[in-house]
Structures are given as C-alpha cells and as structure tokens.
Length: 189
Image (cartoon, rainbow, N blue to C red; front, side, top):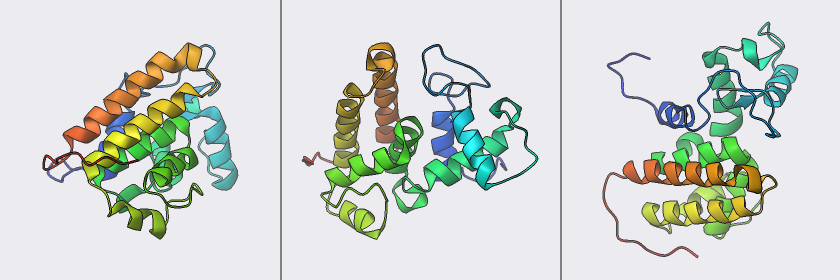
C-alpha cells in the first residue's frame, strides 16, 4: 500500500484482525482449537475450501500461503459477506472481525436481530436499510453485548471464553474509537 494513500476500511479491519493478540500470527496450531492449523486468521479448512473453488498453484497447506493470498480470502469470504464497504467503518470492523471468529452468517444474523429484519444471515438491502433507524454508537454497543451473549453459548467457551470475550472487548473499543463524532446513546433492543 502506498504510504501517501489513506487505508481502506478493509485495510483497517484486517490490521485489527491481524494484531498478535487477535489472530495475527503466522502458521500455528492452538491446542484444543477446532479450527486447527491457522495462518493469519485463515484455517486449513478455509484454505482447502478456497482452493476447491479457486484452483491456483498456491500450495496445499495454509502454511505456504502469503499474507496477500490470505487477505484475498478474508476479503472475499468474510469482509464482503459481513457488509464490507456497505457499512460504516466502525460497524464493518466489528462485523468483519467477529465474522472471522464466529462465521459471517452468525455475525450478520446477530446484526439483523438488532435492527429487526429477518435474520437470514445474508447482509442485503433490507439489513443495510434497517441500520438507518439507529445511532451507530448504539448499534456498536448493542452488537458488542449480543456477541458476548452468543459467545457464552459456544462450544469451547470453557477453554477459550476468556480470550473470546477479551477480543470482543478490544473489537468494540477499536470500533468506538473510530467514531467521528460522539453520540448520545439510544438503546437498541
């Protein structure tokens, strides 16, 4: 990226996800993690699925992937399905990073429940249109809470919950820091 050009929203989201305390690590395996082999937030399973649809001479293991290749996957399979550039940047950050952790469909369904549109897991015009009824700061706060409640129900919470909650808090704080103007809270049910 040219240092004189401002970062895109995707670049900002990716930079957060790739922080070392999140999932910004080269090839690694975390004991008991059902994701298994992971490199820069992409699991071996996601890598194989990508190669089945996008055959390329990239290598059979996610360990051989470049960060540019992994960023391409994260953009196509996580950033775009969770709203991508159709959302305000702070909300895009929360949706993308949680989508990487919990799945894009889950992230979208949590947001859809907040804005009272059918929760089909697909972020389309109805979902985007429903956002206009809410203050962005309120959506961020409510989504933070919904994600935390969702995490409590996930398999593996006993082992990974503390880390998941910590990442959810960091994600929310980073998104709140991106707000351009302070807003008074308006509750979102």
